[in-house]
Image (cartoon, rainbow, N blue to C red; front, side):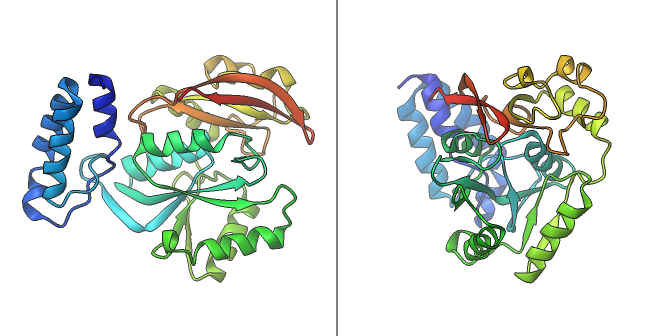
Length: 289
């Protein structure tokens, strides 16, 4: 195992979680030493990991000064709105959710609506340093069945502590009302960290911050099929037809984020074929790991 592999071994530990006061005070120098050590050898990195864990630190990453909130989950599709919500929580509200919550179509092992492989969501979760909890639904899923699966998930050990779920919704009032009502029925709250922001401005802030994304699903009623598989970039925004939201909030398109300030490393993937399914165009992304 070389230096790069050793660094990856260290980076996948996660974020700071410790009740040890001494360890808490020593987090910054430990991180510095750990990174330098990992660059030299895997054996040395593992030795440092054992030392850190002996201090009671089980996870070591995340923006300095953030609070990890065990009662907060973030709804995660792998797309830009999810990424923007996490960025806003961490950078603006200075809080990090305890878990990412994804809906997976069981028969296909893919994110519902986006068509992205489960393995790529796992890559993203590792790159942001958060656990991923997947709620599986069937391909032919009724609304009652979806709600039943969600209710059951919140009683599972993985989500037992969750009292609030954050979403990346921007302006669709009916979607917000639905989320709030369903969570309220379960005794939980909804949170919307990027709600009401101007989507044209938000799209450009997303790119200026260094995020990178690919269009993985396109509604051909709103966009030409050739947009499937394109980069979400300035050229794409400039070529959007009138009436198409720059963030695709009306369902015109969906994205998969491959890099950005919330990630420790880019997501290793490449474009596959573009296929039509159920009236939508999907660009398959293949996992390179």
